Amino acid sequence: MELLLLGVLALFAGFVDAIVGGGGLVQLPALFGAYPGASPALLLGTNKMAGIAGTAVAATRYLRRVRLPWAVLGPAVVGALLFALLGARAVAWLPREAVRPLILVLLIVVAVYTFLRKDFGAVHAPRRSAAAAPWLGFATGATLGFYDGFFGPGTGAFLMFVFVRLFGWDLLMASAAARVVNVATNFTALAFFAATGNVLWLTGLVMASCNIAGSIAGSGLALARGTGFVRGVFLVVLAVLIAKFGWDTLAAWW
Image (cartoon, one colour):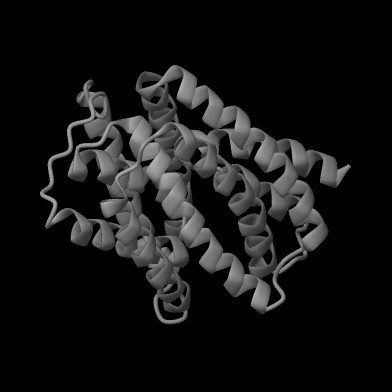
């Protein structure tokens, strides 16, 4: 029964994650509820195994339909791969709780900006020079790759916002690019957890299969409905992230 419930929730997580990210908000609490006695590292590793499967499938489907600018995305992937591991190691000397209020503020800023700018991500109008774009891509991947390895929640949303705001991409392209970078960061994290024996393989395989099914549905809907649909889901996920971070921050202060 636990595996069945985890599979259903993983399917929904894959659906949302394929559009704008945020699948971990569904999968991680489900895993902690199903295995209350397990170590956090074991459940985080299992979540990464399930998440990378769906993200990889979604990225592949986007790549078939959306022409991505690899001059920017390639360096971003390299930066994400290198710095995600550094982020995971940084947990040892900087508690995650120390950055929670800052992340909450950033999420609120992103949500307000996106809501007020009705045309945000509606038109694809690249604004960086050929010389500067690869370096900015690397910096984007490195910064958010480090964050994903260190903390994680909201990485997909931050990637989308930066790709739209900094590079002038539309939301559909930004979503596709964010999935590709997420594959890189998830791969680094999964390799780290697997090497230390922190993956529930059977649970991970079941959840990965369901996550893939959800990602196929989510990416297909995003491709069919376009940027307006992606914008709506993006704002909903931002609202959920803000609510969760706000609750967690207040709980830590109390």
